[in-house]
Image (cartoon, rainbow, N blue to C red; front, side, top):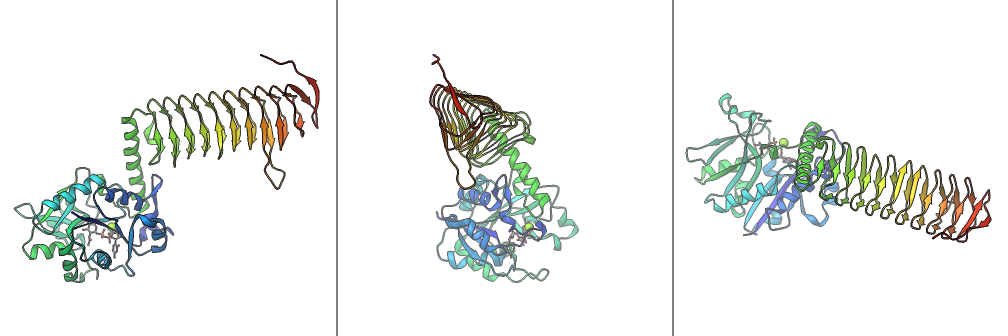
Length: 451
Ligand code: UD1
Ligand code: MG
C-alpha cells in the first residue's frame, strides 16, 4: 500500500531566538529535518512532503530532491498546515503519515509500527502516544472502554481531572488518505487560539462512529520536541548516547561516553579506544585497534589500523597503519601519512604525502610536499611553499636527513640519501647523497652510500 509522509515544519520556532529556521538546527551534526526525513523513510514508500513556512527558502534549498514541499504562508494551525499538502496528494489514495520535523529522536521503527497499526485499523486514523509524568504541555488522550481514542484534550482547555491524564499526544498520526482530506475540510477554527487543530480529526472520526487507534511508544524520549535550546541540548545528549551505545556494542571502547562526540555516519572499527574529549565529525572512517584522544578533533578523515592520535587535530587527512601522531599535531586537508610514520609535537602537514616510516618529531611545517620513505625531518624544518602568489612543490627522496631548522625554499627537489646541515636555507635542488649547508645552502660533500 502507498504510504506518503508529511512533515510539518512551518512554525516559526520563536522560542529558539534564532536567525536559523528551527528545523535547520543541527543535532549531532545533521539538521533536525534530516533526522525526521531519515525516520519517515523507514515507514513510507513515497517521496515525503515537507510543509514549510518560516525560513521556507533555507529549508527548501537544504531539502533539494529529498522531499517535495508545500508552503504554508500563514501559520493557522496544524490542520491548516496539513491542508497545504492536499493539492499534491489529494486523490492518490493509500495512507498518509504525519509527523513534526522538530522531533529528531523519533525512530523510523516507531513510525513503521504506527503505519502497521493503521493498516489493521477498520477506522480512518491511528496515532502515537506516550505515557509520561511531565506533560510538557501535550494534549491529553481520552480513551473509551474499548481502548479506542475518544478525544484529545489540549492543555489550555483541559479540566483539572483531564490534566491528570498521563497518556499524551505525541503529534504523529497515520490516516487513510481519502478520509483525511475530507475530514480536514470539516474542521473549524478553534475558538481559543483561532487556529485549525489537527487533533480535531479525532472528533470528526469519533463523531461518525469510526475507530481511532493509538500505540503507546516504548521509549518516551522519542517524543521530545524541540521548542527551545534547552530542549535542543536534551535531544543532542540523548542522540549522542544512542549513537555512542551503538559503537560500543560494535566493539569500540569509550573511556567517557559523555564527553565523546561522534557524529552520525562516522565509522569506527573494533578495539579502537576513544579517550575523553574526542570529537569525530563528518565523513570520518577509523579502522581497528586505534587509540584516539584525549582532546582530539577529527573531521572528514580516514585512519587505518593500530594508530595513535594524541591531543591532535585532523581535517581532510589520511593516516595509514601504525601511525604515531601527537601530542599537538595538526593535519590539514590533503595530509597523508603512510605506514609507521611518526609525527611528534607541534607539527603541521598540509597537502603532502609522508611515505612509510618518515619521522618528523618536533615543530615543523610541511606543505605541498612528497617525502620519501624513512626520511627524517629535523626539528623546526619549514617547507617555504608560498612565494606570496603561488604555492610550489617540494619533493624529498628516500632516506634523506633534513637537519634542524632547515628552510626548504620551493620549488625544490632533494635526492635520495641527501643531508642538510642545521639552519640551511636550501634554494636549489640537491643531488642524491649530497650534504648541503649554509645560507643559501651549497654542496660541501658527496656522501658514501649507506646500505
Ligand atoms: C500539538 C498538538 C498536541 C500535541 C503536541 C505535541 C495540536 C492542536 N496539538 O500541539 O496535542 O501534544 O503537538 O508536540 O496539533 N506547525 C505548522 N504550521 C502551523 C502550526 C504548527 O507547520 O500553522 C508545525 C510546527 O512547526 C510544529 C508542529 O506543527 O513543528 C506542532 O505545532 P505546535 O503549534 O507546536 O503544536 P503544539 O501546541 O505543540
Ligand atoms: Mg510544539
